[in-house]
Length: 274
Image 1 (cartoon, helix red, strand yellow):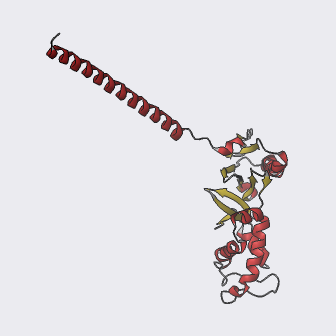
Image 2: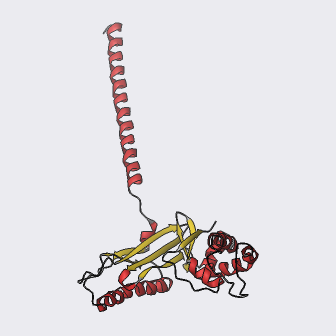
Image 3: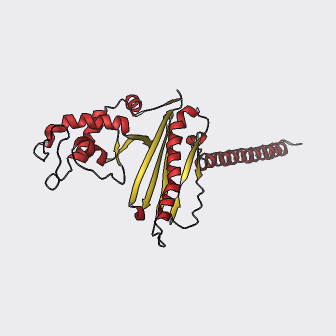
């Protein structure tokens, strides 16, 4: 075989090897890219809520044969993988809500009317795990015009999953390194400083001093202390979007400070712990 023919054969062999290498590399790159796309798709589309390891939401099956409730959308919470002692108080209060449904139902029937109007009972549930704290809030809303009832009740539960303990408002505030007095000052501004003193008779419950826009600020320190105590003991604390909030009724705070008859608020107000 002459030299030129040998060179041609070698060149052809090298070209074949090169083409084969390009094909193999292209296949590897495409396969790897496809695998990454599949992996990314799984990560993006399949999100497991860590709270679902601990709670189950179940629609409450209630047979309203007489059509008393035109709107009925109530669910209940049960807990998994938690010590029963941590959830017992929450579940007892939830059961009180559920038991009240039959009571309301019977009270409407006892009226002996044929037109029940528009009555509703609904629940609103939020839950999350934030920084190893399971937080659940349950709101129970009742609107029955025939009984002059339009109100919302709420309960919450915060559990430190690492230490398996209930996080009270005190513990949460310490954990977050927040001062309850700062929160109470904002509630004072939101509730007290927005009152219409001219058209309403607000009298301090301890001193019987008539409050107005000119002297209410002098009561700030006293009222902030009382509000802080109320929020710590009776505020309904919960986490949403990694923010700890306290729910409260403005009417409860006014009744705590003033010697006046208050009608309970239908809804709660919310203050964020910042």
